[in-house]
Length: 125
Image 1 (cartoon, rainbow, N blue to C red):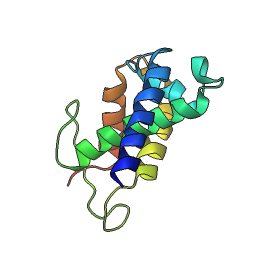
Image 2 (image 1 turned 90 degrees about the vertical axis):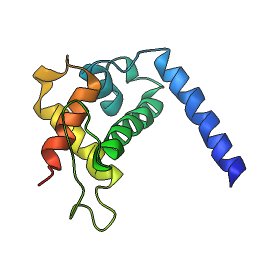
Image 3 (image 1 turned 30 degrees about the vertical axis):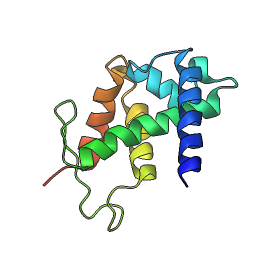
Image 4 (image 1 turned 180 degrees about the horizontal axis):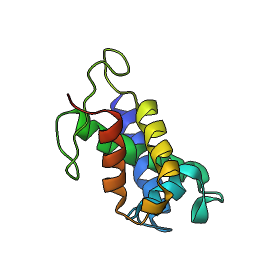
């Protein structure tokens, strides 16, 4: 088990370095292109970029649903996605839908757009 985790961690570092050599995740456009395999990520890095997209979104989402504010936004998981809360798939599809509906906002910081999307979709009551 420990060996598998070490191998996985090494793979993530290598893949992240490969993608970051092409572009940093700074703007919403950057993460949008990674998530949709567009722009500079429409070539052989498409699958790697998609994985980085998923990790970026779920990382922010997990921080938010565990009770921490990101970019002034909160998200809650009670009653969503079953007893475990919001699923990774829920988070990813929510953010991708938000990107599609808010193309004019893609110049904003990536983490802000992800937080807005998740905060709107999974509000705390």
